[in-house]
Image (cartoon, rainbow over all chains, first blue to last red; front, side, top):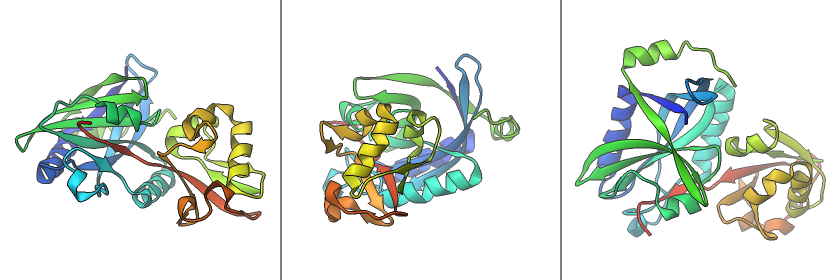
Length: 160
Length: 92
C-alpha cells in the first residue's frame, strides 16, 4: 500500500470543483511523481490537480463521467515534457460513498490512481485513493499534508 | 515502420518505453506487431480479436473508429497513439 501525498490546497481545489458539479459527477486528472516509499516501494506526491470536462451525456452525468481523448493527450504530453507522470484521476460519487463501483472497476486501467470523493447533499466529505482492476480493488493511504509540508516533499528525489 | 505511443498506465508492460516501433500496413497489423513484442499488453488492449471499448487508437488527431477501424491503412513514419478512455461513475 502506497501513501498518496496530497496538499490541503489540492484537496480543497478538488472538493470545490466537485461540489460545484453536484448533483452531477465531476472529474479531473492528477500529475505527480514517485518518491521512496515508507511501506510500499514507492509513494506518490501529487504535483498538480487539473479539472477536466465531463464528456458523458448530459442526462447521464448524475452517475457517470468520461474524460475526452483530447484532455488525455494534452496532459500526457505536458507530464512527459515536465518529467512528471499522468498518475491518476479523481471523480465524485454524488450521494454515494467514496468506494469504487462495479462501473469504476469495469472501466479501470492498471497502474493508475483513482481518487474518489463522496459528495453528500452537495458537500464533499471524504477523499479516498484506489487502484482498480476489473476483478477487484485495493486502497492506498490518502495522506493529507499541509501546504508547507507539501512544499518540502516537492524537494524529495523522484525515484522513477 | 510506424510508431505507437504507449499511454502512461501501460508503460509497465513495455519496460517503461513510451514509443514502440511496429511493422504492418494497417492499424490492426501494427497492434499485432506491438503485442508480439510485448505480450502482456494484449489483455489490456483486446477482448478476443476486437479492440476493448475503453481503448482508443489515434493517428494524429483522428480516432480510427471514424476511419476504417483496425483496417485503416498506415504508412511508414506514421505515429499512432493509444489513448485510454478514462471513465467511471457511482452507480449502475
